[in-house]
Image (cartoon, rainbow, N blue to C red; front, side, top):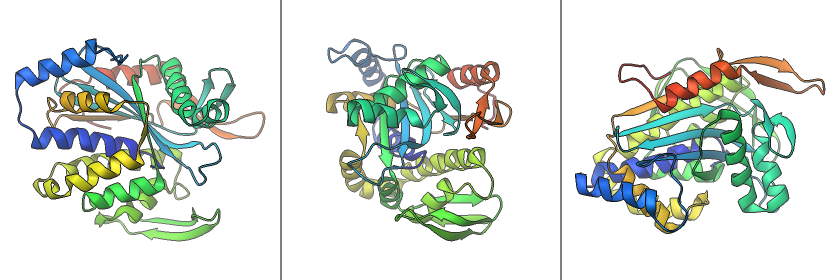
Length: 315
């Protein structure tokens, strides 16, 4: 799941999918909360009754080489308020990577893999987000491009309203080259390949524009995963999640997460993103074109993400 909401898309869809097809009961909710808080496997929740995941889309083209993340989202599942909150983070955000100094936030996964192998990427990415955003992060989930396409196809595609046409003559192909893509404006039903192109392109606007499209894709995927017809697709979807998703969660912890998600209202989904008001374009002394953070504004957005008002609009 290379590219973005990939993970969130997939993992949250499974979580909410379980919510949609499972029976709702207070005892199950209380049991899930207790298990998540007090189980003996080291599962540390943000607070009792909720869990925060870091979702990573990976630009992985070779299993033998470290890779950068191509998209990043924080996802909080809160049982008490029956809510899922999503915060989209641009990959070009300039942050402090623990042990490596200042760099783009998407390099944290690369440095972690380079230092400690496959498990190190997610660990350092979590540490980087937790330190810079001042939020606890319990677990990571990572997907590559192939996984994202597969999962979108597993749910039968997704419905997207494209606000403006997209032309990109420098869209990266699978062989380190480029191809041209065109996506017309208007309502469209997207398969996995088109959804990936829509969420990954950025030459038509910017990294911030792509970040917004990825959040849009995440919502569309969740909506598709909650449709009644998804029931016949769940076995294949669950199989692909298990085989294609990278995570630090043990199988038992994934089950507990599903129990927790069963108590979430599928319609109570809040999305936030780090956007134009929280960052400014900056060229580093080394010539890198990055997004310099306004941390005061970002931390305000993080607080809103953690404690969204019932009347606030998604953005």
